[in-house]
Length: 132
Length: 450
Image (cartoon, rainbow over the protein chains, first blue to last red):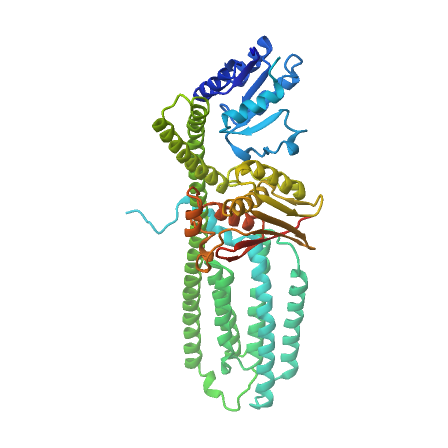
């Protein structure tokens, strides 16, 4: 059972990227990474990953949100599922509860860090089921 | 040598702020109130003087004068009523006009009641004291000098026969001896100037002290804000590295558990638990400082019923191992305006405490009662309870009851402190009713804003 699905991680915390990479590669995903929103959008455009893991707060507050909007507005990336990770809780004024923000936040999942590694994989599998 | 008493330049603004137009208008109103009393007392003096002491008073003239003063005060009262403060100069002018007119009225009253024969001249001192409360510095001396001029004109005018003299005593010839007049005038001048000096000195000291207090209070607010900023900054700085450490430990423990030797697994698990402890505290500190930064919280409509249902879902997920039974007794689609983040934290913290400090398969009840202007949230558990002597302490920062520490090793002791703070911010109140080993009921009352 071979999985060749690719996940792009956009996060400026290199250590966290490596930790996620270990988990995802262990689960047979290909992993790409980008340290900024701008770089992430470029890679998403060129390499069309199957899913994007996006950090809310890189460099400046809300960069993750702007990146999410940009990805959704671009025809070539607009259908890629986005899992958003945050370490800042409710302070941004954006709630975690997806029901409340569905219309507002253009992401598919919104998770608070640290995310349990198995739970993260379970959530990714919702969007990228293991191919037969 | 530097004069350390003198306030630094930026404080001058604060010091001069008490002569704002609003303050002056309020003083006008106060002064008008005093005048009602003065008219009443003058009326009583005139009445008792003529009817009880049998003085030779010219009641017609006196009634006219007091009546005119009454009409003036009615005029001041009507024009001052509920009006907005005008320009500072205009407000000062209004006050000065009233003060000058009062001195004229006083002089006329004094003249009609015997001039130097009558101790009515003491009332000039009251005017000087009042003027030191209303004005500052040179205006007080202007009023004092005007008092001296009017008093001297009356006394000298009568002495030199330019003004008609109204006798009120049967034998008062000695009072018109030039030596007596000279002594009365000089003592009057001296005492009135000295009164002006003392009164303006005392009131200006009072003003300095009051402004100092206001300034210190502002400094305290700034210092408190700086403290909160510091806490928030530290919490933010600590949060991301801790999250990364925790993620690394979780990943190792979940992916490589089989290949770890038993001791390594034990140590890593212990590290993970302690990291969780630090992370909980950091998160609580972030919560505590919520809304204290430049970005204000949003006061917005909130579907409280939905909020509670969502909290229930995430708690059932978080405490899946304990299998709690969360019984909601809430109206459908109850909406109100509030700070949703704060309300969320209040309910989440109280409900998660109820689960944490109860046994597995516990029952927890959350009831929402909607009254006219407030809503009541009642959270009931059948857990460890709180002993009577510990109840007053449970809302203190970092306080955990003995029983709670026994039941759950890890806990920040900040949960209820945050709840209390947020309820205060929402203008509500919280009550607790508990019996050790039987359970606890928290009742939260919050105002409803439509």
